[in-house]
Length: 162
Image 1 (cartoon, rainbow, N blue to C red):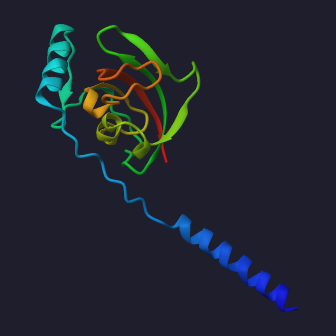
Image 2: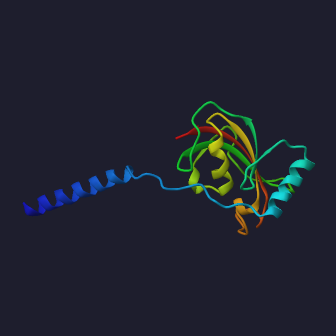
Image 3: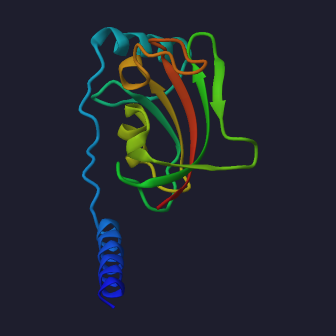
């Protein structure tokens, strides 16, 4: 009988500790990285040469907000549902996208700094284009088909925020 009681207590403890973990608040904060002046200048020149109207963030990310959206804005702890296409600037090579007609979800704090810094400015239903310097993207790392120190462009439809 004592064994059954001890097993019961252990099970209660496990269940209660799991429910406590659900209440843990996200402690992530947006990255504080600021792109070097040379990276910002490169993006300024690209945007000017291509007649793009874009807003420059103090950290060095540029963005064009096509549609603001009317839903909820994410924070760095939010799960976002998006449709997107990612390109390497300069050669225009597409390196990733959501399949046609589909969406994908991410927790914002698990994405590159450029996304974390700009997506909170958009509401669900909005569309934004990001121009991201290497230091706020993948930096010196090679990531799949993205060369090291690549400048990136993302077209993002923010479908939903959870």
